[in-house]
Image 1 (cartoon, rainbow, N blue to C red):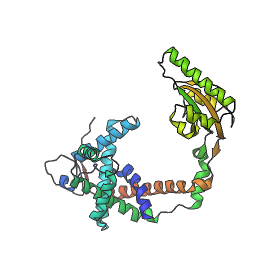
Image 2: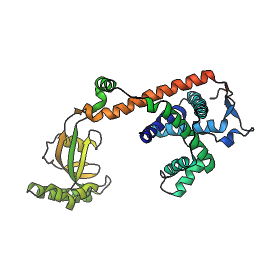
Image 3: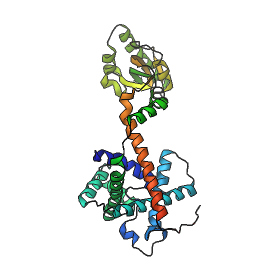
Image 4: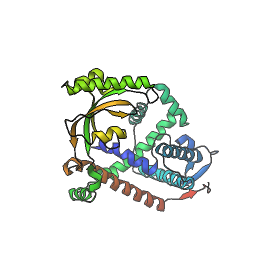
Length: 329
């Protein structure tokens, strides 16, 4: 149980207090008197370098997801999260929570596996401006806070069945499955800038295949023999797809066909297609029994997230927090 809770707990920790590799200053950083401090939390310094790292990472994520950034609001949020992280870390130490080195090493190895090779791993490590020892210290801090949250909140939080059902009933739009089609196709490729002679040859080829299909040749066998698309090995099978997943011309035909029907020749930017619809699934709602576990996990995450937020607020009221960060644009 705890292994699973820690997995999804990490998402809460990241969103709430920036507990992740490379975001926190190491213990060694905090002892450097020459480094600018932006806050002091019960005597522990939040440094300029860790603040800048966190801001930089947040901006990078925003750019990757296409989110707009208000610089002043972002910096205010990051500072609040870093202070909250320090408060939680101090609380975990008061509770006597400890993380052994083996667990830290295992977590670092898990992180390393995200990279295709050693070179990419070292590049990512370099981008954080942290040594391996500093990285391990960061991981240790994060895991210490995780264990505080798990023992104090996660292990003690349950979601009653009636709450899960109530959420399902009041948010039915979230569990709707759009209409889906399962189709196969045969593709004869034509580049958009192909010569007219090449287009004519491709059209002639697809017509020859169409004639074989109309005579009764098996569609899947024809796809394996003639189709130039990546699905040819599977007899042209594209699996199920919903609207918006295929190019418009292909999609418009596929959703009009009945199961078992084969289209006339369809032209798209990829070339010429023959489309066979294998099955259709009408719009539906995911049954409660199929989704209730996911709803339960979501509601538990939200409840724990709020409990952690309340704990941080309480700790901050009781703490001596000094802010030295000036208004920056």
